[in-house]
Length: 524
Image 1 (cartoon, rainbow, N blue to C red):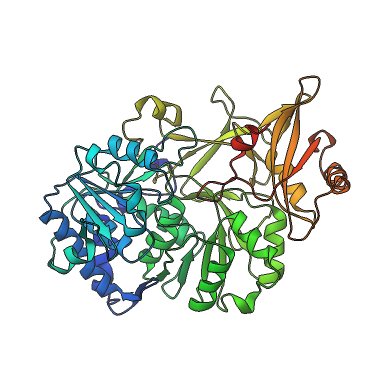
Image 2 (cartoon, rainbow, N blue to C red):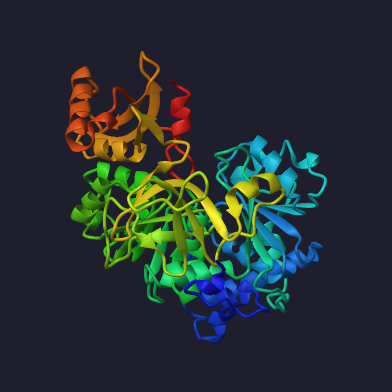
């Protein structure tokens, strides 16, 4: 199946197309020059100021000698400088590589050595991670520091100040590679995921407008950072598609920092992850009056949203959380609940414009109600991985992208998340979904978080083991372990209840808030 079979028309994006012209310059032509585009920790920036800075960034890159398709690595905290450099690179025909700010020096050594950028832009607090490896990177010609102390390197602010605010966009096509994102690296070193010029348009239209209905008068705030696929859509693509305003926060998201920004800037749309929503709910002092008074929409992705978290959030804050599923390879969310069709405990339905199938190990469709791996087809699919040909065959098969996630689909078309393919296991010949057991545990009023992994019993058979984080001031006792086991037995199939429960202070998580169950398996 090709994109013309989907509910999109590829010709809607012109053959000659540069995304910066649409997402940045168009707003000046349409009279939004004075409209607020971004708010960060340092100030506010209109669409006119944004466009001028983007042009300065494009000129700066040309002055540094970058040519069309040259790469610039961006390891940057969330501030106005991120969209300025990102869109400036695209406008100049260069390729920004958006890289996780939470990695180790060894990860950066691999990513930059493999990706071979000519320029590295790095936020000042992160520079120490790169000092040991800069001399080892033969293609790296320039290091630009975003901040006030370049430690011998040029400051971005100085380069922008000396650059012209006028720039003629470089001609590109809708199918040209526009930017890279980094995969999570859960199966090894992070991979460079190559996305086309047209992809921001499609995710913004099909999900940002069609599903969540972002409008020009909205103010968006995303806990997920701009270097993530989820975050770059929430805080960059979607607001700039419709002329809305985006709030950026440089520090790591915690319940305290999130509630502070919600209260200070009163966004209308908030994008978080399930563990963050649960952590906010865990503090009973977090209430509507301490957050945003204008909140009309909340969105969740990264992991499946437990039903208990969604219903508790709605009861306390009066706003539903729309649970969605996306991936770096598809750029953003392709499976989602919608504002007029919220079914907690499900991942919703396919976003119109995308097509999904559940398949078995041979790639054949599974019957309704049976577990299968979700594969997806849509107009925002990546062009593949950089320099990872062997691995791309396993992920991109024809027009389909294999997600690595197991689901069932009911008669009404709603998808029910079961778990990652490598997290699912059979107990007594029956499939166990860690997410289902975790959701049952979280429904207990003493449980904050839970993670379930397989463990062998004395006979060598796999049974569920649960790692549980309790609410503050709840004592961890053997009696509570028995109580939780019985609670799960009473609410889901008996073979799924955890035979062992281990209490933990925290659970290991990725930078996106996903629980790293493989680390818990290693502790067994």
